[in-house]
Length: 148
Image (cartoon, rainbow, N blue to C red; front, top):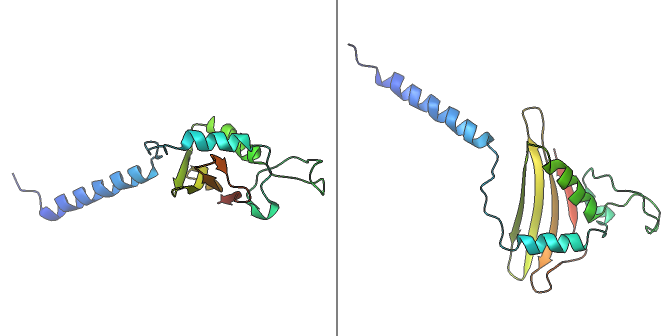
């Protein structure tokens, strides 16, 4: 019986490592620890669901409705539009979503979700500041961003 050449063994191990690494990189991250403030932050977002995201801060394809209370009577994108979009997306099997916040008394937060498919990948972000003392979202810090 002939011994297997070391180069062949090394190539097999390297190939297996590349395949396993690729598969692990494509897996959705579902075991991320949730922020201890997540419940309070989501509650604060629900309380301002009727607040509109300033027009200059909307770089996402949310289709807000036409609201009469807007000065121009045009389309306004509400925080509730982002929440509705996320809920509709969450009923699908693919994709990923997370809430990340950094800071102490005023946290810089990003709520994101998206899809990482073979055809197209995209993410939608709602960025905002959360005041831990008042347990409220800081007004005028809302930004909605889509990334293809």
